[in-house]
Length: 119
Image 1 (cartoon, rainbow, N blue to C red):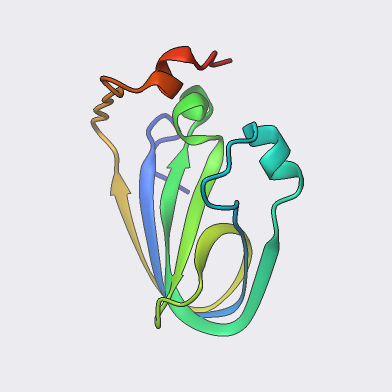
Image 2 (cartoon, rainbow, N blue to C red):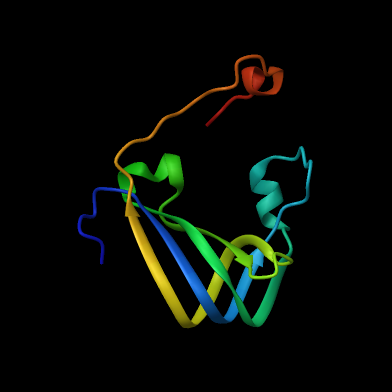
């Protein structure tokens, strides 16, 4: 449990994982995000060392971070990295940080950004 359910937190987990399943979207893909999510590939590694890092966000910050945990994994040898779908831990060191400030910058001269209809 986190000290408060109203604040976002960073989490870093380093060590040995029994299993890590990740997903990845193709580079330079221009399809809509929901289409990419529907057919993205999944990869699983077992008995792997590395670092999992991400953010936990409360419900009222869902639009910024997604609800709950948003995690990414980087293997110790840096050959296996992506967005985490599932994992089983073995022996980890865990660090938490409280997010107390958020700064947002928007593209200044980006035609794709300017014309995109965010929903």
